[in-house]
Image (cartoon, rainbow, N blue to C red; front, side, top):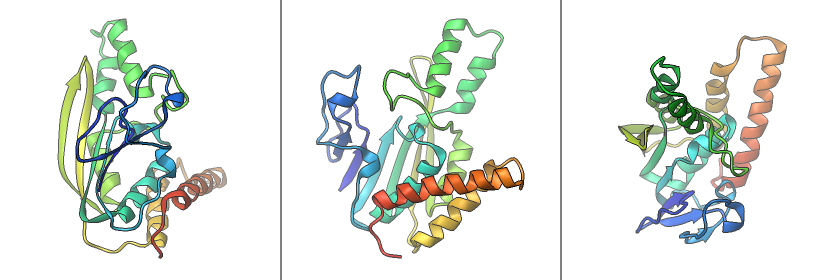
Length: 217
């Protein structure tokens, strides 16, 4: 089974195409989804999925939720299974915004590309990624990045990342430790307030893990 999560109007043959029902959309008038569901609530048995694919969806999740999803998808995927993510290229888009020679119109489009289109509750971006930062994140969760491809569309800049699940066992507790170590990179210092912030992030992470994790351990 291959999953195309947040499919929108793009139907991919050979995948289970999953998206919100039309009632959660404000611009989209029809649905091509095979299954209407909140993709944050999906649950699949361990090592039953061949590929998890998302195009311009992963950036909508907050940092702790994105960490939990990588751990959950690892548990779903068979050894050698694939993650295929396409997200806005934060670095190239930021250069457009910062350039003295960029028109206001192009700056506005770039800002929308980085922060979301804001027409629905889900149409806000929770994180910005560069190829290097996303590669660093993905590899920490038991994946080997096999390819990164940059592309552009209507003056917006994006990249696709392909990663393969390596054939090693990482249990639930391991992922909690991996996530805490990763999120510590975003702390300003070791003060009490920053430590409490990390604890809040980890509670968000744990809440998402419980929604999608079936595998024991």
